[in-house]
Image 1 (cartoon, rainbow, N blue to C red):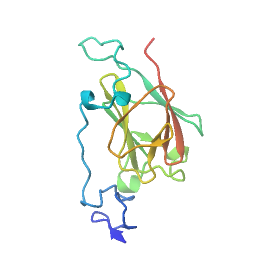
Image 2 (cartoon, helix red, strand yellow):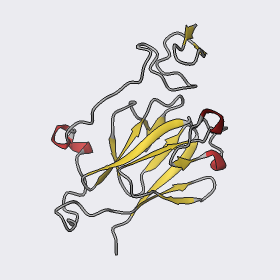
Image 3 (tube, rainbow, N blue to C red):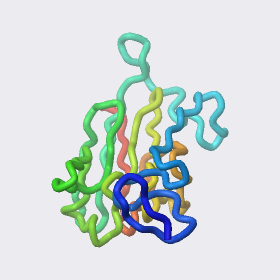
Length: 172
């Protein structure tokens, strides 16, 4: 068994991330990566909205993004911050993600406390698994942790066993 140097939880050999606190077990600390510049992203992940309208100061216009929890039909408008963390609340450990999937069966569905994040790069939205225990899937493909992927309208996300649908609409 491997013991987490941060919280002491025991894990099977070969486990990369502590399911309790999220520490990267091989180094005993957080795994940090800098986002790739957009020009270095593979073509399939490049900005799909390159022709979207430009805002007042030359910045790409914000495109409203919502996620729909498939099992409960709850729609959640993402806040207009640069980064939105999705997971489940654990008040005892002081963990309060921006989007809490606890009311949607997050605990039983295998959603980690720190599961994934969504951020906007230019006018594209990106999803990034942040070392979740049960994985983040985009249209059925498991995401490599800490590697951002472009998400588009009607894409299917799955966090553990909790299914989500992306809803992106240009402002009318």
